[in-house]
Length: 317
Image 1: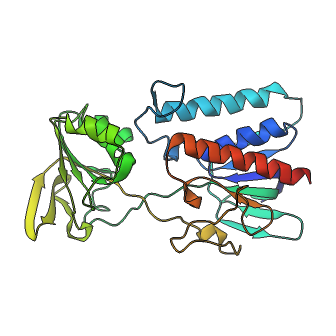
Image 2 (image 1 turned 30 degrees about the vertical axis):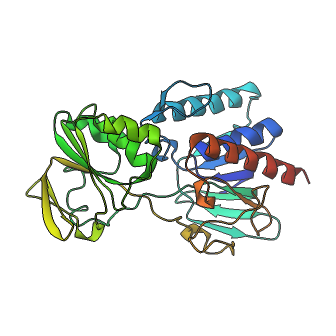
Image 3 (image 1 turned 90 degrees about the vertical axis):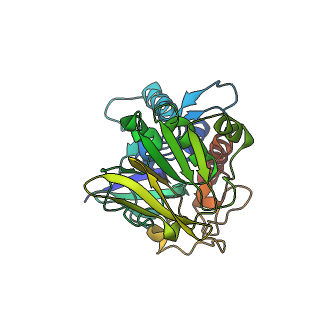
């Protein structure tokens, strides 16, 4: 495993991380930037139709991510020189560990060893899997963790989606176009989504809601494929006949790759940052939902830009 060097390493290749890369490049197009992760696995890529980007009427999440990737590729070509690497490189692997030496940071993936002068952590919130009984048994047999990715496969079928917030609201709005019936299983008394989504869902005759469902009582069942869902509501056992379940739950930040770095975090596990997105460890910055920002596209994008500018100013010193 040979040693590679860069000026800036960005952990997280979603909207926030790529926004940080664009800002850092604009601030200093001579620096070498490496972005870790698979962009199409990001939360933004798995959203349905996005309508809250100023100046953009409507765009599907995966298409929007592709547009940003293309933009970065075009920037690489702008100042391309023979025998020189791209200024911004995507490394489609997750970082497994980060260590700090006197003058740099060392980032390890399954096949890469990277030395960076500064780091931005923008890896977002991971999916919460393996929490519903029967979930693991029926993965790829009716259980999915991405409504936008797999919803069209169940055209004309009955499905359920488990979770809360705007992410699940968008998923349900996407599923209603293809599926005969969509049941939203929410662990809280409300979906806690924007009213514009709730109004659309309330007008959807094929979407229904089950609120305040204890997820520990939920069980996915079937013989070879998903056939139904069991749960308790108001102390009574309930059962739905369905063909697919979309588990769209979000977990707390996964900071296991930072076990060798003493970052300050909140009680809920989010990385603490200052007004310039700097952490308590010099040279490490953070942005996006992993630092507690709300998962709204303009907010995540702006936070990424701010981190990219701040870290470039830091590197100039």
